[in-house]
Image (cartoon, rainbow, N blue to C red; front, side, top):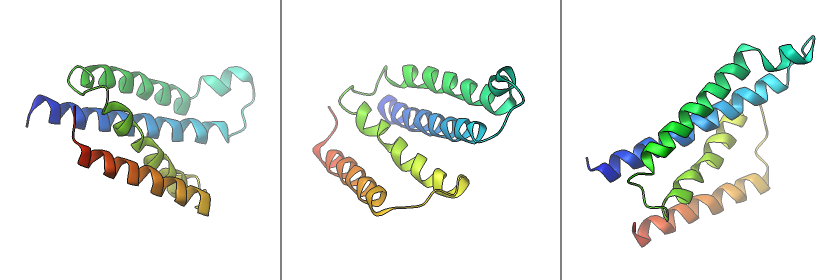
Length: 118
């Protein structure tokens, strides 16, 4: 696999990690805490911010080879990840607006992939 292919996989994994960390932060925000300090110093929040940091490092590594014109397209996959994980883990509903938005994102990614990289 080429440097570009590996970097694209790293970037997609980085976006997925960031999406998981957002779900963890949402889970933590839905809980009640005895004080403000406990709200920020609990395992979910600490792990989520650690995952954000890891995601940032992976993104910086991947962007050494991924063209900047491709980066926003790959990062838009986060909307797909977050919507599906929100449904699975947060019991959020799929509305028509969400489905239409996801369809538009998916079509945009699909159309861009036929245009080529570079």
